[in-house]
Length: 137
Image 1 (cartoon, rainbow, N blue to C red):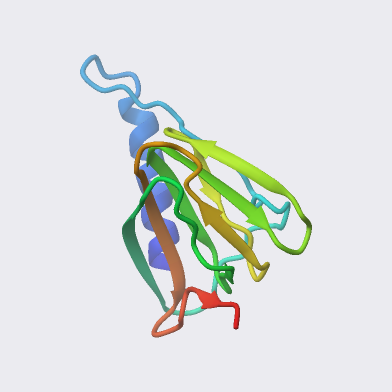
Image 2 (image 1 turned 90 degrees about the vertical axis):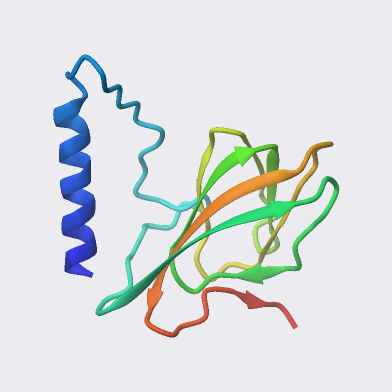
């Protein structure tokens, strides 16, 4: 975990250093210390697996109600994502270029309300071997 945090800090510092270079542009996309539910971001302690995936969700399709026990980050590459929190009733829609820090341990569902496929880059950080998603029974 410390190695991951050191890498991310180094990467951010490198990006800032190169921001002044003539051939490199660094645009900050997003910064937050909270999930979309307003929870503070708390990383798992100890060794973690980092998993990066691309979800492609068809127009009009919805994911089952589920929750994530660990931090999950998403970046909308194409289309739109609507996240409905089943516990608070809060609904948020994200579009291409938006970054999402999903709620932790809160039942929610995601859907593609648009007419084009949704492509979502997803990054999970979880203890080695842990499940990153629990589907509601």
